Length: 226
Image 1 (cartoon, rainbow, N blue to C red):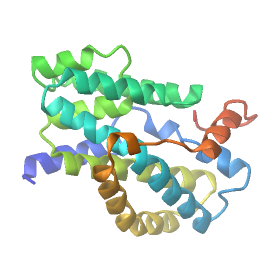
Image 2 (image 1 turned 180 degrees about the vertical axis):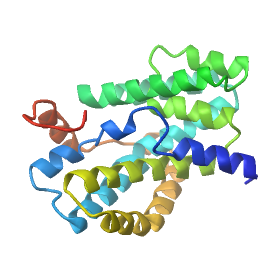
Image 3 (image 1 turned 90 degrees about the horizontal axis):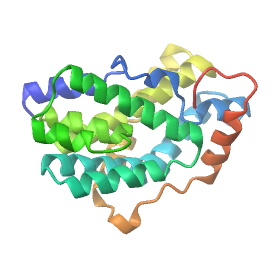
Image 4 (image 1 turned 90 degrees about the vertical axis):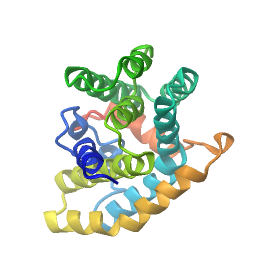
């Protein structure tokens, strides 16, 4: 990968990107509240399971399809997978999360004047822009290869999950870094899985996570928005 594309990838994967990712735990806070995540071992187990059962089998392959759709300027592909991703958000907070961050990243991309007119038109044609769609647009606009963009997206998700555990379980900074280092082969495997799945093999079936999200929506005391 060229140095320019690598630097762009690092920018997209950075947790300091101002789209509000730090304010969401994606179900982790509810799992911590009920005691399912309580220490370093259970935190890592939670992240690995979510990575392989949800991210690798649904969000990551959809993101890869969106990257290819934007790269080929295929409006049908972009619209199809954008609509399917939004429709698959099975709780109100999960839907609000991806729409809010997608909107923030889209606005940032617009302010930075990323992408040519055709690419921007593809993005603006979507009634709702979830985060994977906005991120795929930015990756193509910045000429980040699909494989690298996918790994960057997965790493950014994992880092945010680890940070949520560090702050909320709570775990020490060393434990958080130890978890993140141990996730390298898991992230590579998740990316490989995402590339091999056919359309009819995609699934976000995770009823336990959905129930935790519903409980979180009415949780008495909470830090995160999901």
